[in-house]
Amino acid sequence: MSAIKTACLVGLLSLVTPAGAHASPVGPPGETTSDDEMSAFNDVKWDDHQITLVLFELAGAEARASEIALLRTNNPQVTILAEKLLAEGAGGARKMVFFNRYVVDVAADDGEDPFLFQIQLGRHIGRGAERLWRASDENFDLMYAESMVRLQRVVVALLDNVLLGTVENPKLRQELENARFKAQSTLNEAEKLHAVLKGRAPSEEPAP
Image (cartoon, rainbow, N blue to C red; front, side, top):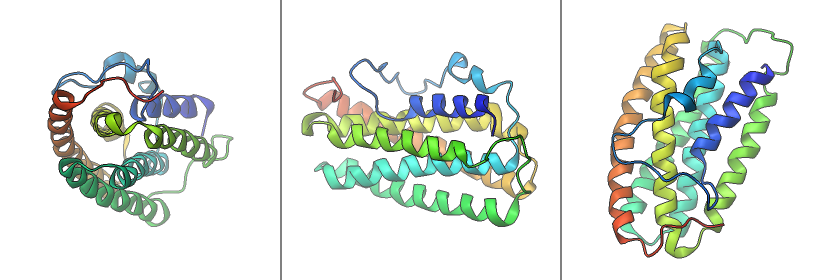
């Protein structure tokens, strides 16, 4: 995978994973990932093999954050969402592994190891998970909800603006359309939870 694709994907995950104290606040329900934030993807062609790897990493980010939430939270509403997203994220990752191995065409050779970016993204997700794990008890639930809102907004925007327009395999396209429906439904749930927690949270500052 080319350096520009790797840079785009690292930038994408920076919108998803929990950030430090200077992170931009999550916008109100209905807000989408901005055109400026998605513009880096507009001139990049993604083949089906690369699409499965992108979605594998995003599903993994969802599952890892939700697993942490189940270990940290004492809020029943957070637990309900985290259990749902842990199952969906793990299931989505398994599906992408299957599609990558058995359904889509072999990746085109663009002169770089196609799995190099996956290592880089895995490290990036790991750092985000560490920040979430280190969040204070009083801020944890809100920080988790914010990260899930960001994730689902990015997934919806990425599917709408990039992946559904470039996917070629009809079975993978159907899977992406299903993923789009799920992401929107989950986004609605995460935004509702975020709104409730934001009203209750003793502090809005994320962990340093």
